[in-house]
Length: 234
Image 1 (cartoon, rainbow, N blue to C red):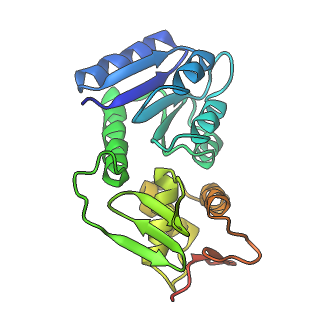
Image 2: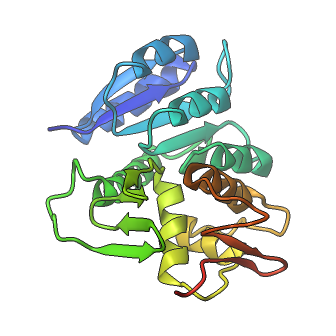
């Protein structure tokens, strides 16, 4: 079955071009030129990935990203018209998994799409052909690497691919403080991280909310001030 990809861009030529390249790769494409139309579709559609332009006529791609993240965990790639670091950071902070700057090379976008889908399938139980159990535990938290499933007290906690990756890295390094910079590079393998970048901080905050964790009395993720984050060794 073909992977289902949502494309939202008000620039008709760009949206059509992306659609052509995606279809040439065998993907099923749902294309919209406005956020309103896309939101109606998202409520009932089953998707594997979304490509969202930031600048849209009726609302912005950030708002659309937030709406998707309320109920869905599939990867989101943001399109930004300018090489603005704040746009990139904002998108990642709100739950996007990757970004690409316009003008872009279609083949580079296709590479990003394939990379995100590989990652999503690897950790999504609906796609994973390998049912072998590969679980990391801490207290009442269980992280099944193969099935991309997080349980707290036996109850499932839906995580985005980025949130899952952060939690996995921290669990695999129990007892060791991991810096925000190290987390950033392991997940995005990008070089634009700087000390003012609050992307990891935002994702940690989202993780804590989903795990019912707190900053002052954390049960799982501790902040090591000036260094990074840590899950204690048991």
